[in-house]
Image (cartoon, rainbow, N blue to C red; front, side, top):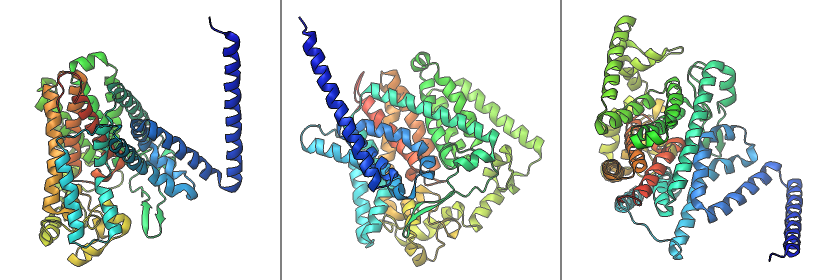
Length: 510
């Protein structure tokens, strides 16, 4: 029989111990707050909680980071200066902390090492970057920051593979992320209606620096208030990138009949997010979404509805253009630009010419292979030396000056708005080829999983990852998307989650 008196006594003892511990913790926090600022105390508590979480459940930390990143811009806007550097870099530090936990688990024998077919190209890619830094005698600080800029999110793929989270965890994280997508989409719609007041609240206009290093570049609103929505992501193109990635993942599930039948509510996510994607006015996001969606609907599924829809859309564009009287070749970007003008401007000769002579990305389409690659074709100029975010943050002008080129886009920004070409300039043809081997290998693997795996959810994820990778590959010709945390993190995260799903269950594909 259960001794109720003993149970009650033990419960009293535990309650008293918890009360004493909470009182002690509260007293400690009050004392710390009297010595340090409240912001520092709160930051310290957050660090301790997340450290404990990472040690016990490192995959949860990656999930928390996935949910946090879309809100980072608005959080940083209201973060006090004394903890700004901590808030800016702590999320990225979590990736390295998870890596340390995984490495310790493998070395201590608590975790098995899970090798993949992508280990070799990844290792060779890293070696080529190190060789480029050594050959070009890149300053160690610049080389480290350049390597970080290129590799930090690629690392996420391999961490997910090593952690091998359960299918339940993967699905729960995905449903949470789709809820975030709906929230961002709804806020974007509200932003288009309310306009300037909500823009002023959400826009991170102030830049932050640490010495000579730019921590966060402020966003200059060169578009009319309310005309391009960005929600809590800080820029319209970043919201567009975020939305199209998850729209393509959702499309993969909707095109998989058994998944679509089980989760019929997914269509509402799609319907909610698509109008907001249009309202971002981010053309690169529009085209990236179309490329991925048509890949799933036409190339893989050969869906006649998609063919009919795209045919009707093309006819509509031609008729609308004829009726509008627009001269596409003369359209250039201007305040108050309509949705149709924004779309047709993509094909405008005047815009391309203006981007070339205005030192935009078209200028770098020509001069990166012509001047940069020919000057160092095999190993490039080294990490942190040309075209990427590290160059802009460090204000590193050395390669530009040596080659007699303007300092990035507009001659002032450092980056060149083309991730493929910035990588080509920094890693050379060898490094770029190895990265394409890694990236293309994962894409082909995902395509094989989509066609051969027996689990419908794994097939759906594979379709989504394939489409995401195609969209990002296109997007990388128009931005530094491989370096943007609200895009690159999810690309490599879901590539890793797909590998985990495909490696277990029905007819595992390794």
